[in-house]
Length: 433
Ligand SMILES: NC(=O)c1ccc[n+]([C@@H]2O[C@H](COP(=O)([O-])OP(=O)(O)OC[C@H]3O[C@@H](n4cnc5c(N)ncnc54)[C@H](O)[C@@H]3O)[C@@H](O)[C@H]2O)c1
Image 1: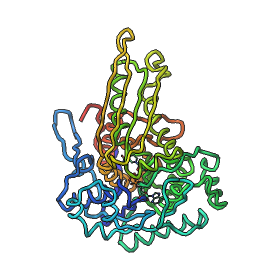
Image 2: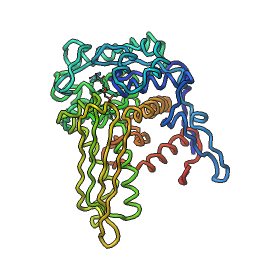
Image 3: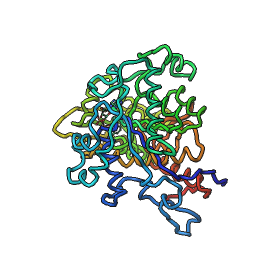
Image 4: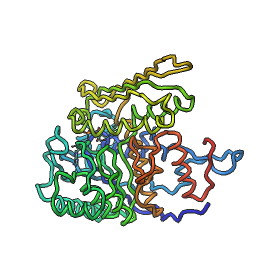
């Protein structure tokens, strides 16, 4: 296996988060600062905790990933970003009510020093929010240029060697892909013609990041990194992109249970998933347009895993429904119920119920850290365009046109680790590690 030439991880790595004042972003940043201070544990983070088997099966050699893969050090991360509200990140994290006051106090000074830059926002794309810290109205092209200037200024002021830009902002309304999204030329023309109906704020951020040499991570289900125009830009600029929609709670469970049914050749009649959620994300998703974007992302999983076209007698007639209900008393502590109507020997019906009392941002934060470090690694490896080896982290993994996305969590895990082995010049493995 030929070793990939990886540039050194030396110097500061700027981490610019879109929606930096939100629950996910503030929990990610506060947590990462606590971990690097030695007062918090990075539970849930593969880059910080997982090992990787190297060498022959009987060698029993399991170093930590971060010991053998040249990842950026947590001490080198510098945080910033954009939000619709100008609260510093200490205030924002208090408002999100995910982490306890005593945990926030441990990193209060660092959090207070992070102040959002004014956002590019268009209420037609997120109906339930009204921003106060927003760039004055201008054409989409001009707003994108302002984001490019923000990125350059942040890089210079903080002495960063490299940057990563991550979307952890609200889910935008559903829009379908049109001709203007299908090639870079058509997209740039739409940008110049100020087609606000076709170009969402998230597309402006992605365009600005990639053109400034920063990998872009799409954490929400918005149409963005999955459209060919952005893929083309990323290929042209030699920049990695990945997405979309962090795979954290119910879909994480789904992508573990569905492969279990399939490997045992058990049938499925129906899968009903419902959630109650009371944070700002829940409020945004209460709008039918934003919910539609999320629904499409959540629904795609089962069909791809179960392959009804190959197994019509088992999976040819599945009723799959997903609901999200805004219920303020629960705040960030989501409860997700799944009712699975499965079918066994001779067609006898059975039921499986899952009740996951989770914490949305606690599940998402370690994914953000891993994605930032792996995207920066991809950049230093010279990888460009869609990073399908990072599918492990997403509900709707972006994939090359014409290819099928991989949803099975354990296959995704093997691909992730084998890519890391390739990067460090180790043979890939097909048994568990
Ligand atoms: N927590 C999870 O488990 C999870 C899983 C998958 C996806 N997501 C997605 O991650 C995103 C963040 O979730 P959250 O719980 O932190 O939501 P949140 O509402 O707490 O945070 C979103 C933040 O984005 C800001 N924002 C909105 N539009 C913006 C724009 N155009 N520019 C800059 N800032 C903007 C808002 O002001 C807000 O502070 C959502 O899209 C959510 O659907 C979360």
